[in-house]
Image (cartoon, rainbow, N blue to C red; front, side, top):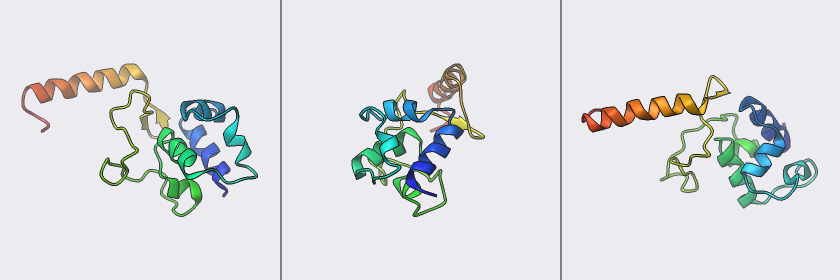
Length: 116
């Protein structure tokens, strides 16, 4: 599977079009479509990996694990507090209103001294 095909597959799993992924990554017009015939730069590939919550290794075909554990120490480009982050459950995006409920529950537990 090519880098383009992996991006397309993950975008579909996240409920996004390639154009949406392209825009969220801040790339030029239809940049991802150019990757059918030419390799992306490392920086552009990193931004797409961030949008799709995967690693560049997965997108490049170096691993078949599309959802590695990401943290700031091993992947400093990941912003785990980013509101643009797409959270998923069973391959489907979690609606914002669900995330708000989860955040409120977690904030409540933190205030009570739990979850630390």
